[in-house]
Structures are given as structure tokens and as C-alpha cells.
Length: 198
Image (cartoon, rainbow, N blue to C red; front, side):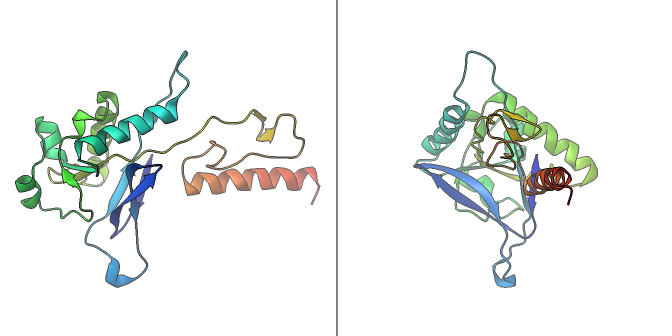
């Protein structure tokens, strides 16, 4: 999934003491930056017997915090692909200026290989339609986690055992973005209207 913010900033979020990153775009022209940022989320679906995906995500984020000395990490894509950590000197010589005071480091020390491979592969695919996306100086901040819980039991979004009560959107675990959540809500609203013949 990709979530894009134009002329935006990277910000930190604190979830019970674990720092993660997110994007933020200000309306005020004075607060806009020269950067665009976006989140690439690599979904992991676990199999039995593992049942604690939120704990796993928090653990990965806390590893990044540990390596960053209590903060978050930033690494240039080129350094990641060359198998080296970004240091302060390399970050300072980057053509992309960070919008968050993060610690230059190595995301491969905390993000599992499968997720890093997915992110790098996606960046190169995006580079074909938006040249420059997979630039050597593209900055990767780590990590962003979305703590999606298990979905409730439903039949066509209607909660099992709760007639005419519907679970929709991000909070219910059915969607991962505002546009999908809106479409989800419109679908259920249309269903309710048809049931009530309005």
C-alpha cells in the first residue's frame, strides 16, 4: 500500500512508548517542505500457531528505537542497497534533506529481510512510472507500523450475532486507507438503503 503526502514532513508517533514514523502535510504554505513522502506498507499474514502480529510489529519498531538510541532511523536507499549503514556524513551529502531529526543508521539491522525486499522492489517498480522514486538519496525512515487487529466475524459486513450492525473501515480491520474505508462505507450504506427500500 502507498500513502502519499506532497511537500510534506515525516513525523514521529508514540504508541505506548514505541516510536514509529508517519507522514504529515500542512495546509499552511509556510510549513510545506520541498519533499514529498509516502509510506510503503508490507503486509505480513502469519500462519498457525502464531497469533500475536501486533506484538511482532511493536518488537520490530522497538528494535529500530533501540538501534537509534531511543529515536527512529533514517537510511538512504543507495546505502541500503550497497549493504552499508548511512552515517551522518553520507546523510549530510544527500540531495534529499531530512524533514525529521532521525538517527542515520541501518534499517537491515531491525527490519526483517522479506519486508525490506518488498519495499525495495516496490520502489524500483514505482521508479518506472515515477522516475526518481528509487533514487540513491531517497530516504527511508523506520519504521512505520500499522497495528491492525483481527477482523470481527461478519457476513457481508454484518456482524454475526448482531443483526443490522455493520463493521466497516480501518477500525474494523477491513481497510487500510481513507479511500478504501470511504468505499467500504458507501457499499454498506447502499446495502442499508436497499434493505430499507429508500
